[in-house]
Image (tube, rainbow, N blue to C red):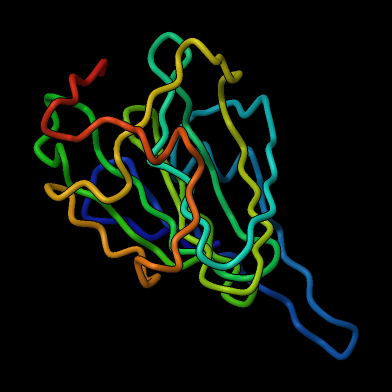
Amino acid sequence: MQIIETDIEGVFILKPHIFNDERGYFFESFSARKFEEKVAKTTFIQDNESKSSYGVVRGLHFQKPPFAQSKLVRVIKGAVLDVAVDIRKNSPTYGKYIAVELTEENKLQLFIPRGFAHGFSVLSNEAIFQYKCDNFYNKESEGSILWNDEILNIDWKIPKEKIILSEKDKNSQAFKSFLSPF
C-alpha cells in the first residue's frame, strides 16, 4: 500500500496495491499493523456505510470532543468527491481543505484525523460509501459547517441546481461564526 501525504498534516491518501487477473481483483483494504506503522496509531471501533444518488452532498460534519472521530473512508461503488476541512484552531492550515476523488476504480482511501469536518458529493449515478471510525457516534456531539460556505469556497463538482441536501446540512453554521472545539 502506498501512503501519500497531503498538504495538510495528518491527512493521508492510501493507494492499495491491486492484484488483477481474469477472475477479477484482490487488494488488502486495511492492515492495522501497516496503518499504525505508516499513518497513525488508531483503533477503529465502528464501520459505517451509506448509499446516495447523484448530486447528494453530505457534510461538512464533525463530532466534538470527547466524541471526536478519525475516519478512514473509501468508495465501494461509484464515485465521490471527498472533502476534509481542517478545524483545529491552532493549526497552520486551519480553514484549508483537501478534496480527493474516491472511486470504485481507483480504490483510494482517505484518512481524516480528529479535528476535521468531513463531507462528500456524489459524482456518479449512485455511490456506496464506507468509513471506519475510531470513536462511537454521539448525537449530542455532532456539528456541521455550511457545505457552500463562501470562505471555504469548496467546488463540489456538482451544478448547484442538482445538489441534494438534508435539512441539517441546509441549516449548518457559516465558517466565519464557527467556534472550533479543537
